[in-house]
Each structure stands twice: as C-alpha cells, then as structure tokens.
Image (cartoon, rainbow, N blue to C red):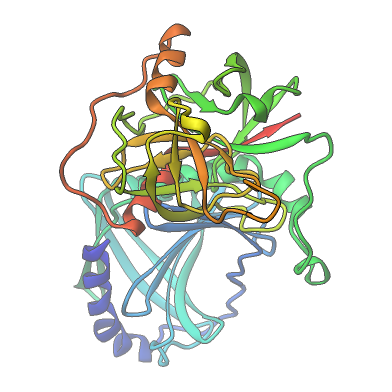
Length: 398
C-alpha cells in the first residue's frame, strides 16, 4: 500500500498540468456515493452504492488520492476512477486519453471523463467489462501513460482480495439494496432480521471452512448463517457442541486461506486483543476491536478451563477469538462477570475458554486447526485488527 501512495503522490503533480486541456467536453453522469459500508479488505474499503446499483472498493492515500473500482447492478460492466481534492484543473465532463499497461496482462487505452465527487475532482471510465477489472486487480502493478509518456507505476497490492470482496458483495446486492437506510432511519439501531434468535461471534479454524463459537450462541437454533463484512453471507451447518465447556463448531462450504494458530499458552500480564460483533443492533456492524491484558490464568472459583481478561466485551462477543501480540488465539470469549456481591459490580472482569479445551474439542470432532504458533514479529493493534477481520465472523442463529 505504501508503494501505491508513493506512486499516486506523483500523479498529483504529473496529471494536473495535462488535465488542464481536456480533449472534448461531454456530460459526466458518474455519481460515486456509498450508501452502506462493510469495512476493509486488505486495506480497501468495501461498500454498496444505491445510485450505481452495485458494490465498490476504494483505497485512499496520504496525498488525498482515492482509487475506486466497482460493478453496476447487472455485474456485466464495471468502472474505474481516480479522485483527489487537489485536482482543481480537471473539467467536469472533459475527456482525457489514458493508457494502462499491466504486468503480463497486456495494454489498454481508453478515454476517461472528468467528474466531481464531493470536494474532489477526478477521472473515470465506465462501461468496462467485469473481466477487465479482474485482470487489473490480478496484475500486481499497472503503468499509467498520458499523452505518450508514463506518469506513474502503481502497485495494486491487496486489490485481488478487494475485487473478490466486491464480487461477494454483489451476489448479495438485492438484499443489500432492500436494507439500505433512508435518512430518517439513519439514527435508529439496526434491528435483528426476522427469525434471528441470537447473534454471536466465531472464527475459522480449518481450511475446510469450520467455524468455532460458543454452545450458548447456537443451542436454541435450527439454522445458521455466518457473515464476514464485505462478503456475502454463508449458510452454515451444525457439526458438534460441548455444553459443559460452552463450545460449538459449524461448517461452511467456503474454503479458508487465512487461519489463526491456536496457542496453548496464555501468560498473566500479557497484552491481548479481542475482535467481534457486540451489540450489532446498535454498534458498528463491521466489527469491534478492544485491547486488554490476561489478568488471571483461571476463571471464577479457580476454574482452570478459563482465563480472565480485562478487554471490554459485550453481548455478541461470545465465541470470538482472544489474540496475543503475534496473532495467535489464546482463548475463546465466554462471558463477562456479573455482580460479585450486592454492592460490587466488576469492571472489565471477563472470561475466555482456554485454547487447550478448544483444541481437545476440535480434535474429538475430526478437525485439525493450525498450531504453528507465531513467536516473532509482534504486530501493533491496527495490524492485528486487520488480520482478525480476515478470519472472524458474525454468527446469526435462526
């Protein structure tokens, strides 16, 4: 992503002068609006545009440039756009001849049109075949030429995952369109869908698409859906549960590449991180990230199946991963403490199931999660949050 930002910084200087003299003038119908967002995938923001009738991805950089690509409602065509508030010389409706050369994917030449987006101006090309954007996202890098000279070479790191997320979002576009909030509804809490009994959190534990969560999240249900922001919902099937240890596992038909290792060691005092979907009817539907410490290596009344953590959790976090600074799972969120006495309501006294219990449960059901624990290259909170989004899901129980 830094390579993209560096290259785009050059675009601001290189394109402003050429754009001052457009080829011709014509109407610019593009209206980039995002009516619903689904979080980020590999650094790209994923959203849905009611005006364009489809899903889109965008990446913004330090120089205020934003790259956009998306699909229209039919999924037969796509569009590509660049915007920046510094590009004052671009004329709305003006046409600009630009050539793109991709590594191993050939060359493409097209006429981009100037347009206005909020306080920024930019250029776009619409009516592209879906395959063009797919090839572009797979290219790894693209050289941009204007008036016969190369003005930028852009790295497209993360765009393949972003394109897959847009495709997944587009599959669910009819449902999304029905749920887009009107201005009068914007301040209202999101209500659970009809038939949903409860929601919780889970995370992928096998390449075959198994999801680990809590028994109490799924115990009263007959059907299950798992959701990852930016992707289409996935139907899930019940595999097994352990009521005593409050664990359950579901299966999906979606193979997974990114899985967190399960570590059997949680050390008192170490920093831990929690990602999940608490209070999804009120808080952000794209997930919530909190930070704390391991405050004890046993639970209430010395329950050795649990660890005690200080990271804040709420209803809906149940079943989510507790991560250490290397991205290993060291626990599965279980509960928060209730009042310890009539006058004592604890703050940030929460409990998670030890991964040793989870590993035994998974092994007993023929599931082998990753155990190649990472012990080097600690990550900061922002990086861990992005990692957690890749394997953590919301579990909706019907």
